[in-house]
Image (cartoon, rainbow, N blue to C red; front, top):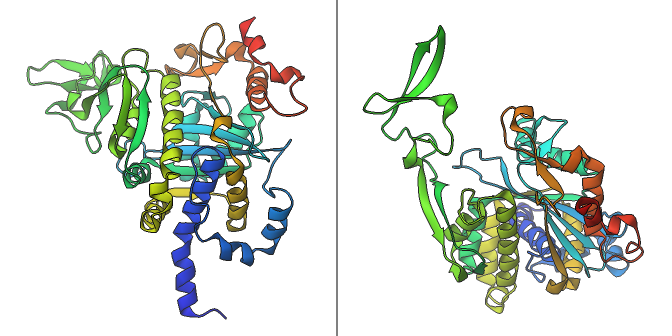
Length: 397
């Protein structure tokens, strides 16, 4: 029987094991960290892992690759705290020589649930807190791609972690401003306006009234005529290299209404990948790796902000894979709606309850699946001559 002190020590290890999992996954998938942090004892406690460490990676895989679903949510204090702003599939070959990051746009439509893909984690959380499982199942089925693991982080933990490593060095490729970046805690602020119910043509409706009595039907408010201006702030980024703290980096990845072409889901996906790669580089810096206090603080920061289905005896296996990854092997793929080369197109709002959604070109989900598989296996042995390795041709014809 274990002593009370050993049980307490084991509980204290949980957040560190989680951050080690995050580190190893994200290094293998271009974010990760902390290879040396407390894994020796864990390996000894898991004999099966020892055998796998000596032989193969031991991780779940298919066709020599392990696929990880990475999700980012706003978390407590944000409007729609469980909606996923970031959805990335990280595919790593078992030797760590090739890593592909595929960003899935949040507006991609899921026919089976009749909702956008960014809602499926939230739906799962409402159903016995099965967000990770639901997201894995739905996205895997939608794209016909196996997803072996899932990892979720909320942006509150991300912001603190960026500050702990001293900020991120990022290149802003295009100058842009966003006049509608949401202010936390202001989501329901009426900005001095009133919401009243009035009757017109025998029908009751809610309207927003200002001090002059002018009214806008609540269901007709758009980005263009939104009267609740106190809910937003204007943020601006200038082209060039920039050092960003956690809050600024978060605004950089979450901005949705940027000018100069930066207001699209695709531009945001590209910025998200850029931030993840920069975070990886900063965490692996000597200043972080040689600072045990900083690593412990990172573990505490992420402890309450992450969720994963990775088992503890798999953590050393991710760590082993992480040590093999060469940052130059990371490939960034963003699904977009480019008329000539993109894999997606915008659906007609009339067909999707008035929503702006993305669907595969010609409604062909198999073609989209082939496109993604082609990108994943682009440089894999035995796949270079397959029809799936040249998916771009299908969208350029």
